[in-house]
Length: 243
Image (cartoon, rainbow, N blue to C red):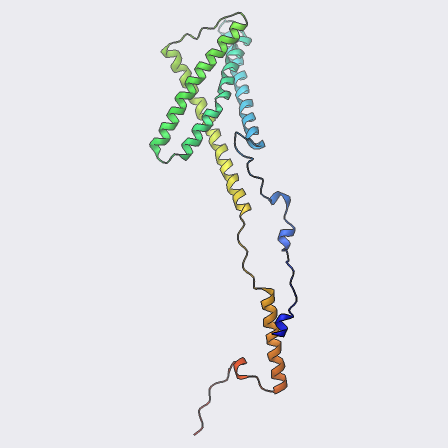
């Protein structure tokens, strides 16, 4: 008991791998992901979508103007750029609606629910795109002293809806990948913030007491010449009792 009471105090030891942890291995602070708050990765992706959309619009305008010139019509690149860019601006403003639809589709359980959400999102996206595009063109041309006629008809609406369907599918697939990337980051942050529990190590005080007890037994064996019966194992073969 005296030896146990005089056991030296142990200090907390930090493992080497905790001391040498790289800064890049630390979990990023919470609340930095998502479209509302925005992180560099998501906004960079959105900027890339916008850049690609504007590039496609410019190429379409140039191609349309060249086709018109080959047919003998006016080249009129300015008017065609206006048509394309006014449509692209409205599409980019509607990207949050597509992002919301993608999230709802990913959260839905049944196939019928997913199809319903996709159809509702597509119809809403196309309707808002047509209304916004026509309204923007009418407003800008009115400010410039001109006028715009959409030539509203079933054929015109179906023509725009067909193009909107392709646009929604492309943007939806891109947003789906963004959502998958965000979920992978969340899983990685959760794994880094909750590391595996370290294996339970025996108390240093307990190890010291066991060592002290063994030393005490050894000293008694040395002084008496024979170990106490309770502290030694009998490894010899049993002998027959004498008759």
